[in-house]
Amino acid sequence: MQVENWQARTFTNADGEERTVRSGDVMDPTGRCRLTSWGEMSPEPGAFLHLKGARVQYWQGSPDLVIDSAEQVIDLSDPPWDAIDPADHWVEVDLTDLVNGGSRRGIRTSGTVVAIANNSGIIERCPECRRVMRDGECAEHGPQRGEEDVRLRFVLDDGVSNASTLIGKEATEALTGMDQGQIRDAIDASTRAGFIATLRERFLARKLHINGRAMVDTQGAILMADSVEVDTRTPEEAANEVMARWGVVL
Ligand SMILES: [Zn+2]
Image (tube, rainbow, N blue to C red; front, top):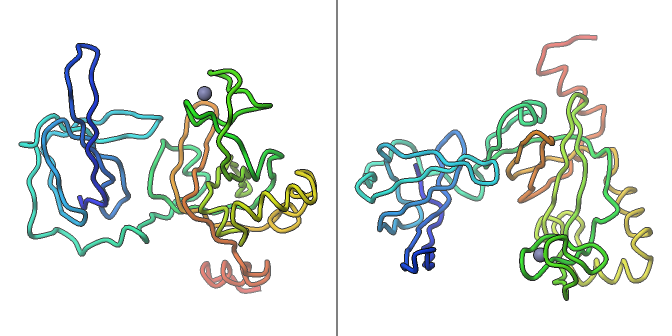
């Protein structure tokens, strides 16, 4: 697999010992995932690694690879595939297949916006746990001075399945063409309801392409979007494309 980034974090465990855990995002042609190492290793971004006997551990529903020793890693100077561009490595997965499968990173999927949540726009996060606060309170930590963040919450639907979709600050700013300050000003000027109404006007019933990851559990699927594109084709163009692909003649 190809290493995208790598970090080391030191902490003190329950026995008072100092431990270092190293982790990073890794990719192969089928997708990407997280690699955690308890052995000392510091691969450069772009390095190719071959792992022996890695374990799989589930973290927030996503399968992560874990190795316990640096000896489980072979650094390949001769990569088994052409270098992958991390900024553009997304595996296309049908929304219904995602909803019915397990959690995955590095996916690209699409669906039509069928709902936009009222708490889209500026939100307050708990400074302790980063959870979204309601009415100045965190469900876990009580009343807090929240930290302002930007997020959109859409529901995407492909006609068969749907998934709640969280669009973080960077992707929201790119999608709306507004930065955090402009979004705050828009909400102040026209109330949150007015801001949500403009979002609905712009995005409801539009088809979106999402790059990001899917978290799937018994409650359903949540897509976390790293970037979002609006499908600018008219329904007619989209229909023609489908007919051309499947050889349909009217
Ligand atoms: Zn909290």
